[in-house]
Image (cartoon, rainbow, N blue to C red; front, side):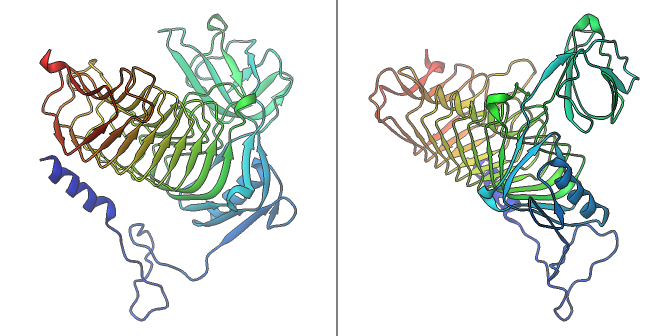
Length: 437
C-alpha cells in the first residue's frame, strides 16, 4: 500500500504543463481570465532596482516595494534587485503573479535592529491606532509586531501591522486591530517583521537573493508569524536559489500554503526551524536544499500532506535534522543526507491530543542518517501511536563510536511499521523495539 502511495505521489509532483511560445504556428493563445495555462513570451516587463542605477534607485524596502507595486498594477512581470545591501524597515509584500529575483549573493536584503517598547494607552479591538511609551526609533512606514496577552482568555496575541501616520507617540496603523490591547496585559510593540511576505496570493517566484535576518540585533519572532520568508494562505510559490540566514526565528515558513516548491536554497544559522512547511500545507516540494546550523533543519508542522523532501543535505542542526508529527501524513522523504543532528536525526513526534494525530502513512527511503545526537543519540526515533510507516533502503551510520547510541527506536504503541533493506552500522543498538518489552 505504501509503495503505491509513493508512486502515485511522484506522478503528481513531476507532472508539468507544456507552454508553447506565442510565435509558433498554432500556438496556444492567452485568453482573458484563464490562469491555468501559460504562454512563454519572448519579452516581458522587468523593473530594475539598484543602489546607484536602475528604473528605481534606492537601498531600502520603499524602493523595492515601489517596483513590486508597479509590476503588480500591470498584472505580472519581474522585479530585478541589483547588487548591494538593502536595509529594510518593513517587509516586502509580494502580490500574485510576480517574479522577484536578484544577483545571488550580491543582492542582500537585511533588516534594521529591532526595538521593543510597551504601549502606554489601551487600544480596543475596533481601534486602528496604538500609543507607544517611547517612540524613539520608530518611523512612519515601519513594520511592527504588536504582542500581548488576551484580557479574555490569557492566550498570546500577535498582530502584524505597518505604522502609517504619527502624532507624538500615537501611531495610526494600516489596518484595524481586531483584538484588544489593554494595559492590564502589558502589550508591546516591536520592530519585527519577515523580510519577504505574502498573504492570500498565488503564482510567485522568488530566486537568486540573499536574505539576512540580522540575528544578533533582533528579538525572536515565532515561525508561525515570521521568518526570512513568511507566507500565509498562498498557492503555487517557487523559492529557488535563495540564501536564508540569521533570522531570530525560522529561515523559510509557510502556513496553509499549497504547492510551494523550495529548491536549491541554502538555509542556515536561523534560531528556529530552517524550513517550516506549516499547518495544513498540501503538496510541498523541498528539493536539493542545504539546511544547516538551525534549531531543526526541516520541520513538518501540522497537517502537512502529500509532500516531497528529496536530495536535501541537512547538516549540524541543534535539535533534530528532520521532525514530522501532528497529522502529517502521506509524505515521501527520499534520498536526503542528515548529518550531525544535535539530538535525533529523524523524529516521528508523539501527539496524543487528538484521536489520531500521528505522522501516519509516511515513507522514509534511501536516506543517509549519520552521527546523530550525543552518546545517547537516536538516528530515527518513532514515537506515539504512529501507523503505517515504511522505512526502506536507509543507511544509518555512526562514525564516532557506538557509545549508547541507537539506530532505530520504535515506541511501544507504534503500529504496522515496515522495515525493509535498511543498513545500520557502528551503533551499540541497531534497533530498539519497545513493543517487545
